Every structure is written in structure tokens, then in C-alpha cells.
Image (cartoon, rainbow, N blue to C red; front, side):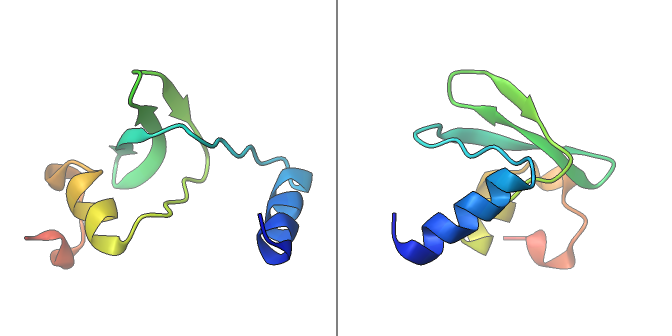
Length: 77
């Protein structure tokens, strides 16, 4: 981890956040138009007040979320 990444991670943890590595996400959970958590490949479900994706926009909205839950016009393929 580089210095900038380390500083961001330290700040995030100091604010109460948790960082998981080597935890592939199967899908993003969406309820009432908001991301509320993720389901990991092993089936574990993690709920969070804020969900951050490191994927590109296409994979975040078209591959990780159910298209029926996406409210943005740009979510069409």
C-alpha cells in the first residue's frame, strides 16, 4: 500500500470504517433505491450505512446490481 492509500485507509478506520481485502463481492444489495450492503461470494451478507465501490461504473451498475433496482437512466445496457 502506498503512502496516499495508507493515509486514506487510516482516516477511514479512524472514522469507524472497516476495510476488507480478498473478499470478492457477488452483488450490491439495494433497497428503496439505496445501496445498503453487499453479498460476498461465499454468501456472507454485510450491511452498511455507506457502500463504496472500487469497480468501474459499468461493472458497478450493470454487473453488481440488479437492473430492476437501478433508478438511473444510464443503467440500460
